[in-house]
Image (cartoon, rainbow, N blue to C red):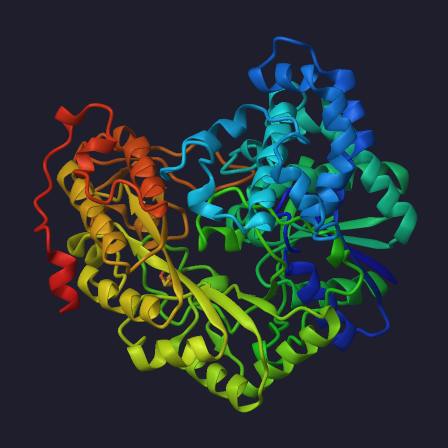
Length: 625
Ligand code: SF4
């Protein structure tokens, strides 16, 4: 049996999404008779499009006058075609010498995205980027300029070739909370864009290369779903006997009520929750149809049925070590778009991804999918086993950077892990998600730093004690201030996830939250942040018991495909849309050290609509003592 596991486009470009690596490592241990291969179609598609041959095809399809980016590209197409391969090689870290040419600013065509380079907060009019890179930061400066060049090209593709194309997602709209399969099927069977055609070609090449009996498509996000169906469609057309299975985060979250049989024109199986046990069951079932499936949708007599059995999930201790074997680790592309040292971690550098534990040890937040297995089933492994896994991955990849992708890594587990890393002299660099809870004392943050921790991210959410309590977040703003300061003083950068538009949130609470965030930046507690708009989801306590949170759900549409976000009315009546742009602009400025002395109202277009903050100007300073 030959199994090919594929990550469909698009996902982050700097490092592989880890699902196929986890499953491959697991199956090599638990089903050694199966020939498992993995492919990252996301990086492969990017490298095809962002190449000399790819851009020639793009040029052949563009029409002048479509957008500013398209017109700029057409006017400079020869220069783009001539430079693209060198730029991608540079961003892959395979041609560092090109940095000096890029920094000279006469090699690369500079489209609309480069306007941002003229607006730095620095004082040097001749060199507006000097504040970020100084005179010696040539490599980073070149990486930033090359990233803007790639962003310009992505805008060209979006503007003139495929309106749904982005560097980190493709056609997300067709999948995210899409109640029916209509739009997805329409796009799959309608006229293909050039990106679709290149994706079909890529799928055919993957099939030719691997000749799989079974293809497993992992769909972590809605922005991967269309490509997954497109790859499935292409492979089925070439080899109808090939079986195709779909799984992953998007499926687990949004397709739990799947009932549209048309989905099974493209795939044969849709598995829910952790993939290890369902895939093992599926492999056994394909060898012997009498063997049971686990949490798997199939089409039977034209109807969709969820088939399951009493087979057990695999304990975290037994899932084995992810393996990146077969993935082109030297071809990933590091981008440096935002000039913020913490923010760059998401797009720059190759990070081995690993989880410290399965699920969330807290599992209480009322906006979170705590009823789903990926959050609710908390399962740990001993620290020494984790260090064994880390050593094995370093030996395989030659790379010592780790991103711990837990929903919220438990402080006690991190402490044990740090002690064992230090005791065993394992030198790594790591970062990950946590909750800002008081167990992260100055002593613990220093220990984590000694073990290689360089950054953490965590939820400050609505930055209001009333709303944090409604969320059951288990933290207060003052506690977050103390914990984040402890991290920063230990030399660990901090990113805060922020949320606005929570049920019953008032305009006053939003502006007060921004003021608290301003003070946290000003006091050096956090270095990076991002505001997310609250959405009620079907699997969260708020989505399931809206009355407790003062909101009313709207009548849902009939759902046969995806279900996640649920529309609601909040009688409080705050115009949250009004705040979106000002909140984004404020935090963007704070991340670059700008506007920290300004009244938070100054970031909003119509100041008169925004109440004055009621937060004392020294709130955070006092909390820090
Ligand atoms: S939001 Fe984070 S900390 Fe809260 S329950 Fe979900 S995963 Fe856990």
